[in-house]
Image (cartoon, rainbow, N blue to C red; front, top):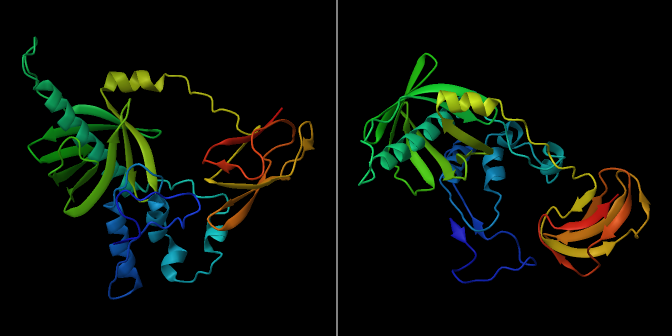
Length: 292
């Protein structure tokens, strides 16, 4: 890996967004891409947004692997932007096993806290892993860096040196090397692999049943807001307060990554508030314009 920055450097939004470059090689394109994908699985960055999930997802994309691409590749393949990828069945199994192992280790560790009022109990074996919208019953057996996780009729074996606090679980699953990024959340874990990003819960069967009964939280209506998709500089605001705007109409221009991006309304509406003006710097997800 080649890094273009040093510890303590300040990176403004006007700086070239590439702060590090990862280069891999192999006997042919496919082999080099395989190595790149495995390296990205193990590449961990904190504190800033990065494009590693996108890069990792592209490594498995059929057209990219063929080499039949142009500078319009991203626009052609991701016209609505990159929203992550759905996990394949092998990825679901891997993330289920990794999450179960981490939860088992943490549960076992908590059970061995000293000066307990209740006796130390063995970690239970039956759990349900809530992987996105999937509820996966499993049986877990821990054994000091080795664990077996039974999913349905198939038993998977994982061997790893992972310890609590590490953001990356590396190991061998069913004889194959894996690397999963996993971070604790207020509820459950955030797991990532290639372009997959999922919130995961590992709970008792009773808790899983109760979790299914929770009402689904309504998603906020963002159609009445114009939100900056990236950090940038407002070049122009092309609407006025009280103006009626049609879906798809350009409302402002934001310059980012050396390009000018026309920001368009996602629905018909009347301009209620304009929170920016030409020359302003905006952060990603900043609310620039509001409609009523």
